[in-house]
Length: 294
Length: 285
Image (cartoon, rainbow over all chains, first blue to last red; front, side, top):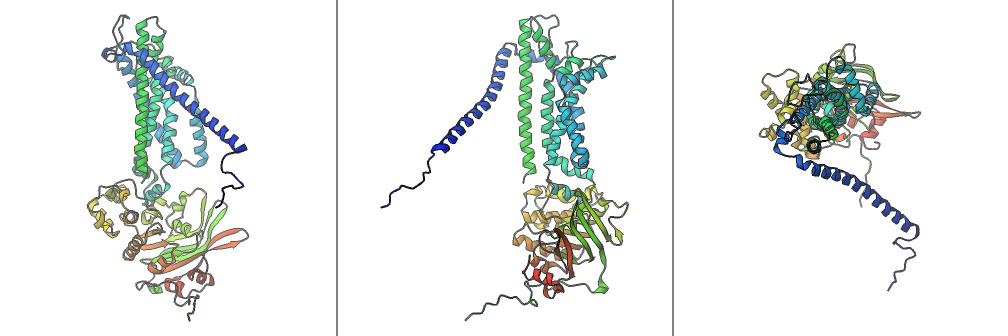
């Protein structure tokens, strides 16, 4: 009978033991940091929802603000205005951004593509207050505030996001697919239109939706371009239109408790939109990746 | 008592050679490609240099040789696919029916329209089977009788019977061998003159490979075929003419060169060059 007394042990001892403890500690700290991020989001959602609860009713969504500040009234005009402004911004930024991405991935020589990418990244980092004052100087001074000026400002915010997201998606298209189309004697542009864009549509739309969610909450550009408005529901984009971010900002400055509740309510609406947009973007992306895979 | 005869007589060759192969007599030769002193550089590295050969109409010409000898680089010069590689420069001449495809004012799109290509990995578009074949003709303005054209191309690629009931299904739903035949159908749907096949069966199982090889014999009645293969037996089975490429290693430079080009019979049974003999008998590569 042999005894089990090897000259070495497979159990942790000495330095290995210390390494294991350090490993466990770092794993714990990392987990805690991740939990903290989740907790922050949870806390924001809960506190906004609790404070918004008194304001939420059918009237809140369907009625414009009460002009004389009395009880009742809602934020319907701000919802309409936000939809119009963000919609116009998307209509500007999405096609332009996709074209930029197509140029960068399909046509541009490397020597041009790299600096243009850098420009897009800088534009993405541009403080939105700067974008706001720029558009204010160009489109508002000498004219008046207007929804389309707000849309232009938001489009500038969205453009680099859309372009970079579309570019990332286009880069995922296997070069074999491009070669297959080009080998048929098809021009580059028709290849892009017929094969590459249909393949990447999901990913491009995902980028568009995320950029839209980002733009919907931008406040600084709209303070310059669409903040002095008639609170009634309007679709006249040549004038400043009420919108959710500016409404949250101005209502929270008012001394009226009801308006404070409405500001929280509007914040909840905005947050819900961003959450839904992000989740649907994820779903869209998953769908388009299935298409690219086998 | 057993004898171990390990040397294979060169006369027999390592593989059986199909009967229907034939080398063109000089009188029957109709030159499609006349390639003169072709050299390709990728930046500072030379991929191939000094390649001169002729490719004949309605024959299958195979390019064989060890990995990295430039046979794919060579075939990609024939329809200007190397234009897509950044930093690739091409010297020499590629005359296609007398016209230099690298000449001034030549549009690579027009070249590729006449000289189709099938790639190593099947690359069907993420579209339906029908649209995979119909897209090329549609974009190129061949919209008349599109259904007939699609059927003809799929029949020509020996795929029609397998897919005729599911033309609306995605091309990606097919098996690997079927996908490759779909790519062949896509290429012949625009009625090119020449079909370039870059290792078309290297990712396929033996049964699918046999199907592709049989298809090639059919296709050469209408098209001129150029195939790159690392599989010698495949070259021996399908090609009328075979070109053997190899690597020339000199002073830390590795350059692909054309060693020998002749009828497939000659290359596999009685090659003129020692290097060819070493390769086809399996002593090298």
